[in-house]
Length: 464
Image (cartoon, rainbow, N blue to C red; front, top):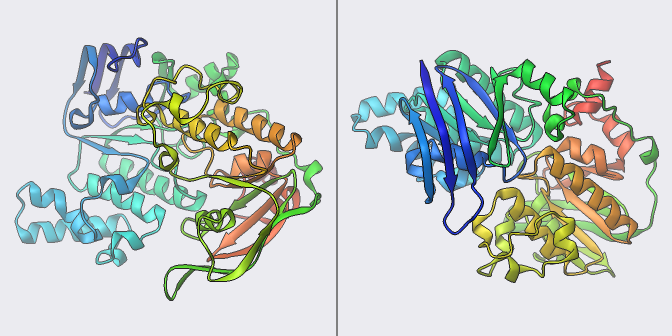
């Protein structure tokens, strides 16, 4: 039985000439797991929201959209959907609103928490959860009502690799147990390829294909399509090589010595941290959610002050925050930053008249980066710069960072994207519990890791 069916569906946002979606026709059967891929601004998020009436954006919709059954939705930022301050209250909210009696709600909450590995956190405040736990809670709060259709919009984009793998493992088990129909937007198929039954590719708002995953792989490879890079690395002919990054070179232009920082007294986020940034290099910092990476960038940039320790540099610093919307204060993109060489380089010409909150996530990320680059700072700090980026945009960002270093800039990136870090970084550091526990040149760094390592490194190590 078809759970989702769209026929000749087109959609346009108000005051935009180009259609966000054009003549989309596809269907999903009961229990089908479909991976939705496509470049940034190809229409993935728009399509998902149109399938859930409560989230459908304003605009002109043509054609037909049919969803048979109830629909659950999980986005990138779990915090945006929470309605309670504690785990128990979040899980109890929907069944209570549905009219279940107290005993039934209590049992349902208990078994749901156990299934999603949240039973030890039932009485915890949500703000104390890790990023991975928050996203699992978001999924559990949706699945507690057993929706027929589950829509996922890059749910693991904000998670470190281990947390992302745990989320996907739960998703795999849940799909096996409940046979829920799932449509999941993702920029890479590395972790969900073995779960997926089918792959759907959107290109410029149009449907290129929806087919089984092996046929999709063959088509992407045969056509040498830009989105081929979204496939798991075992299907690509790329080999990880960091031979030219075997030793640290360059002078130190920014250093942190014995840093201590706390948002609340007695709860240190940075604990005796030492860190060096090397001139004209791409310096990467990786590590689990909530280990203090974003806080480190805030302290390095002077946004936050440590209560002990020192940050030393003679160069100017600009920072791209994890939530890029924090940088936007104007009514149009054109007012946020002068459009010209930098915006052309980032491929965002044409969005000048749009409000920054009305553009795609990848476009917002590039607009914010343009604003940071326009400062002319010598040292550029980037917090999760690839979030919202498809595989093509990641390649373009890598080329831009290489160019910036060649032009005399120094880059620091905090990222959960291990493949991107492996592709671009000259120097890498691992952060844990508020400290840098290792910092090495890229080649020995990734060779020394066992769990937090780039997929290509893992493939080569296993003889793939």
